[in-house]
Length: 261
Image (cartoon, rainbow, N blue to C red; front, side):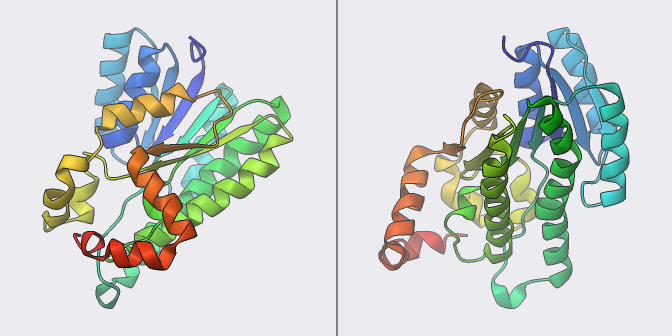
């Protein structure tokens, strides 16, 4: 019950992993605060949470790539509550070979996955510093540890998230603020509707895809605890660690699998 009564702000909460995290927080009597672009979906999820779990659920429409909107929404929230946990979950990817990269998509991915995450963090972090309490959880990816073909831009954004998170973790420790990166492999969500329009990647890896509920439980399990990382699945994270030690060998052995996108 360590989450009971705690305010947990979740970006990208209108579906997928963010929605499942919200349900898991509510199950444990935390108070989810939902942020996303689709206000109608947020309203439906909030109503479901309040009716099912008997906890209050707040929501605000927000596009995290709009820095002015991020500032306005978080100023509003911080006037009304202490934010105990921030889950930077908003993000998207598009899988393309480098020669097919759309530079507009590249800007949008960095705006949401990196700049939006940093903007949300910057709004809550000073308040957590002053209270000497709080937890910032950044949803990265195994792609932030080992890049594969067709994921160059997406992997670059997640490498940036991990770099930012690892630096912030060291800075925040002196104030008693916890910082955690979450590095999942592919998850069964609507992420691949945009990332993999052909459906080929999902067909190739479907049997290894993680369940969103399982990932959500693992994330909520570490809330309000000093966890460095959450890595799922374990075998994929082991491969990422081996890659750091033997990159040429892993690229050679894994070449066929890496091209399954």
